[in-house]
Image (cartoon, rainbow, N blue to C red):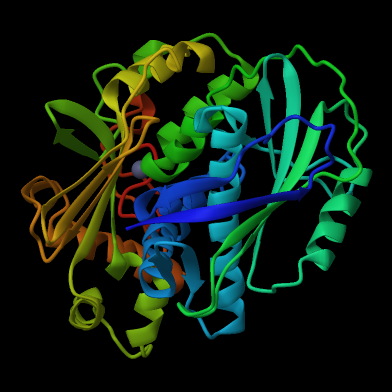
Length: 414
Ligand SMILES: [Zn+2]
């Protein structure tokens, strides 16, 4: 399903030439999902082992949020949640996705070039996203709401802009007003820029591929992710041998004869779904696993990055070098139970129900789902066990590793 959303530029001053003749955007449901989740957080600098269960949980939680509470009609995006907190979450992530799509199409920028603005050292309000185009710095704030009167939201964006002392060429806001039911009219995105601040040039170029690093934070074991992130952040010369000949990604997927590297997710590993059936009296992971499977069925997801991009990242190439590759957006449904979305950034998302995708099933087996649920169970119950793998250092040969972990083996021995 795709939705066409009207753009309202009446709050953009006439002398601002961006968005001239820009009337609408069209967005599909997989695109709405992908733009929303991957840009929601700042790429972490370091991921702790304890974050594993949280990250495992986050992706299926978002997929489910979209499946259950977001409905697209040809001209509207409907927020179907009735719970206040969920309604806010849904509006927020849809607001991010639509705002980014407006930015991408309106200003002709690629999604890979847009990054989340890091938290400033002083406690001030700041905007959401930044990018550089033709040597100019841009900042954008993306909002989503079901409240039809947007005056308060516009004011909020104005206040955030006021605080900012950096030399930014153009700052603007997007406010997506979602519907609460399908008969509630059309979804509109309001653009605002008030007052406009003219134009100082910044020649900095974005060199770090944050777009992919933020995806990798979900797709790589934290032991590898932390090394890669550190190398980009501190600009340390490459130590390729650390990654050479190692299988650093858990999963691979072949689509149209091309390779993708990444990881798998499952609705049953969404912490909220586990908590819903978990009574505290279960003594075996197997019991919890059976209960969640009965309630959620088998919904597995693969998310991966095109292997050629990974190769470039591991050669520490800049964003510009990575962007020399171009990918076409593809959506396919090989069967009613499987859908595949390959985005223009070379990232693929495969959804498979009831064990129908053989590539996913052969790597992300039911046993593996159960094993990961065990990590979650240990984490939830603060159960730490010694890793137990044989030590490799010379002085300790013959003894077993004593590092405590919730994940079977410690980060040295996984
Ligand atoms: Zn160990």
